[in-house]
Length: 388
Image (cartoon, rainbow, N blue to C red; front, side, top):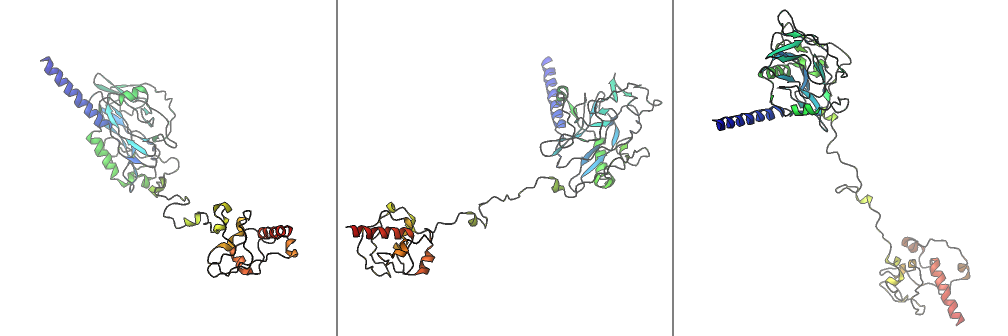
């Protein structure tokens, strides 16, 4: 018998854990821009015993409809002893994520958002369970003592900064973090919103006047006495306060741009890539060092060239690299140079740079003077011959 009871207890515990895990993972909506501020409204009168206050919140219907206001309302607790943890929006790295509310033995973390009427960012001070019956704090909750007798009066000293910010984290959001106790509550048994709450939210979603793009942050129905009672005479309208809310026209404008090419030079596939490379070195091979290859004899005829009349000489190892442009095959200009330049040329200063282009040499023709290095080397040869 004891073994059977133990097995049943284990199965019940596993089922409760499964329900708790399923109920706690109630966040799947994420938005790139923050919800509007909380509207200002009065709490409607509590309809009777056993009803607990659930504050209103901004939900999201998609890019076409955007945020819409789910009115605060009084809801019957699904079980005695359960309290409501409100829903809230929280920043998750690059987007705002919606955290669904739930029922539990204790009130968990709801982003530090001050919804008012007992929900001031931490816990709930609007009432408490006692002997299976809920007692209302008259200093916070709007109850009629004629109909409801289980009341008490405790003044709440709120140390939390009261503002209308409706989300945690991100730019301008509330910086509250869960306490160790609230983190432990997150792993307790949770019950998701009851059917009346789900229908209440759907009714708000299908009502165009509840959309922030239409009411600009001031919904027509801010709170109801019971779930879904949007046409009740006791509905509460939001008060006009502050600047009106304007939803982003282009939802994509608030997100970082994607697929934007970066203008790096030399990207594969760019048509201007060749212009980013350095110019190809089109200098003749004569710019190589003389040791790279021996100079051919000056009088060796090439295609289209006439042999020179000057005597055969050994290659000059000290000639500058720029003195060899005439050794290229296929050149048509004569290569004959005077063996003894006139004295006037010896004393002339350098008039052309060493890197004179080949096109300029072609323009001068056969009578064009050679480069200064060539003249100098040619001058030294005859002088050596005269001394001998």
